[in-house]
Image (cartoon, rainbow over all chains, first blue to last red; front, side):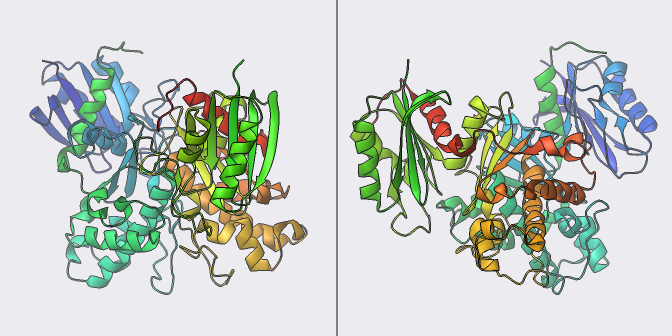
Length: 298
Length: 298
């Protein structure tokens, strides 16, 4: 049986695992994100001491270079995260572990995982959105992960912002009040002075949050026309949020698309991913599958 | 040599042609859009009296049903255009002319035409946007036209709307101040009291227009990550508009994507289609090519 390595490279920790499916994950490790050198050293040590793998998949925070023909393939590029701007990850891991490496965004990896084993099986065109510290979106179109020019960056689209209702200016270092700048977990904490998890009983928090999420989802629906939208991440754990989002999306779309998906069946159309907290690392393992057997380029 | 029929079905007129490429268009007709019965009668008459075709492609205004497995394939669905709501077009033309018929949005057809013969040759993922009476967007992803749930409806995403700068409430009958409601030719005329063509020397018109177009384009870039954006339509004929849009998109993106395309090379990244006023009907002919040789289903 084949064994693949999966790495979910996040801004605060890297989740590593070895396995081949949700039912076969036989080694896992959580490595704190410190400097690139230190973090990658620990990743290499983990895989070096847990038996061989046929390939490694990396789903990383970004923006990043996922173009296999590019000289800077495998690099995290213009991230605002200190110490990580224009940092090689994929090439270093490939060179040190000498296995084929697949490198993509964390959300594209999660989308692939949901397509392989989760809530998007059989779909050709859909997206996976995470609303956590930031907001990200991964896209599959016609059964293949989408990169296009770079890769989708859902969090940075602009949405309407009513400054009378919400004077918070947004906290994206690049764009201020883009979608992520208004509706990420980080934005919620900056606006209300405490994290989302401590705001459970504040109805106005969730009404505003649902409104912003819906405005962005309308953009996603109008541009991409996904067959399904999977939306997860820490902020979505508030159980009343998703139903509020459903109602707002339907109100905003106002019956324009003649489809039950953006109507009576919106509960199925915009829904939670099913792989849960393992979506990222399982997606990375699914990524690894796609390059196993390939050459290890230097 | 094969001959295909192309129909660009618009809200005010239907352009019909027979041919196989931009260099071979040997019959054309312009039919005013009146009632569905009358309009389709004239289309059938045109094709019936100009020699046989192997297939017909229809690029139509929408929203519409382009799903070949659907019972209502070939129908225009929830259009606000009087008399045309939930109207069959594709099935009627197929039944009366007894040839394979391809049916898609006008903008998807135009995207296909630009991919076949124009400014998008060789690209896998790109979009074609028209800013005319309304705003529409067609998408190719991984070399195939994108439909997903229904089909893209770029014009109906929401964008920021500063009511102090622009008190015009927007004129989309479904959404008010969506992208189309603020930035279409119809919106320009409603806001300023005269059509765009009579506002050439009003700098404030084009500054606002460029701002709105750029806000929508940022959404398209963040969701779809197209390798190129082709943007045409009557409103884009104002020669100073596209350079203003380039500047605004770069300012809004603020260097977030580490790519020259959204930077120094934006003039090539967001550019005009090259098939001009024939993009629609040529796209429809390109659509026809895709179904030629297929069975004529009843």
